[in-house]
Image (cartoon, rainbow, N blue to C red; front, side, top):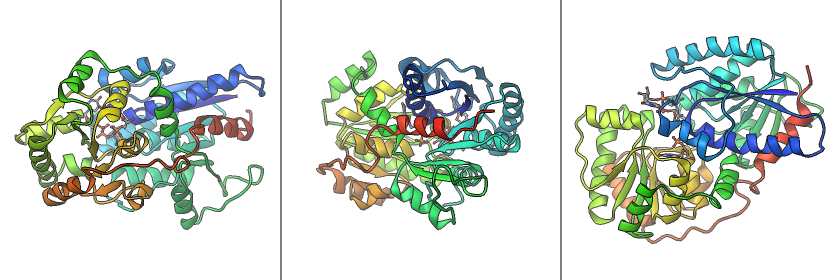
Length: 378
Ligand code: UD1
Ligand code: UDP
């Protein structure tokens, strides 16, 4: 059977690394017909340190199609992807299309497939921020609505789908009107467990950590549209991080979108150790060695928890609400006073891992076994 996987943005490379490896393992066993995976990279992220480095480090198979469709406004980018993905899918004729998360590449992949009557599997289904101003919220709601198999990472995610009227049904009982819902765990947890065993920092990051000292720095990332495109929000975040960095070093791998906006708005950066976006291995080593995390990333909030670090989330809300309920993640928005107060809350916090919150570290295998059972061969 043939699966076409559509990826395009950094977090999707981390997620596909897990599932592609699980497909390889499945194929090397004697479980049934082999799965052929065709990897399609939309090119949403295209810089070497936003894309290629992940393929190299995580040994993700080279994409069969690299479409080079990054950049531009939301609608134009999604529209270009839809047009090109339709062409590719008509050629490849997969039995199913696999998409991850909530980016424009996710929505374009799902939409191109469903219009060709190809069933869609959505990994990281059911997440909601309940903020329709986020492009990601629109992407994930629409993708869930047109998917046949909804693989949820958490109990919260499956409950969100039930609230929206999706009904549970058994593997055999699902159909176009009633997609299959399954809690499989979080593939990013699988990734963290697997790659932490082999991750080695690059010389630059290793020497920065050595210079600052273990647990003597905070790790920060910022890239969300609602922060980078809003002058007040971006100024609030950087004013707070400037002050914190005067007390405890802050390392910030800087997303290209944020870089453009900081320099475009001539924001002052003081004390913060700004570095270029890093690869996943550097990120793991930074997470392992930091004292805590400040981020507006979805993935990095969870990774802070996986590496038992407290997190201040630079957003008003989060899809990973269980981390806020547990007290390990403090929502601070982009407000200077709230960020400074949140740092006091987390400064000495110890994070205890509840092993089952994000699954058992085998989400990838579960997804592949379900796909092998569910996909009708064409
Ligand atoms: C996208 C996703 C977001 C995800 C993030 C992961 C959508 C709507 N947003 O946001 O959900 O959290 O990826 O990082 O899909 N750029 C470069 N080089 C690159 C990539 C981007 O310079 O390799 C610059 C370009 O100016 C581009 C801008 O960053 O226009 C924004 O990139 P885009 O992919 O549209 O959005 P992200 O903010 O990266
Ligand atoms: N990441 C990385 N290098 C960086 C910043 C992030 O490898 O400089 C990784 C991070 O560890 C996580 C993924 O990229 O695995 C998350 O991507 P991002 O924050 O861009 O997107 P989001 O999760 O918010 O969609």
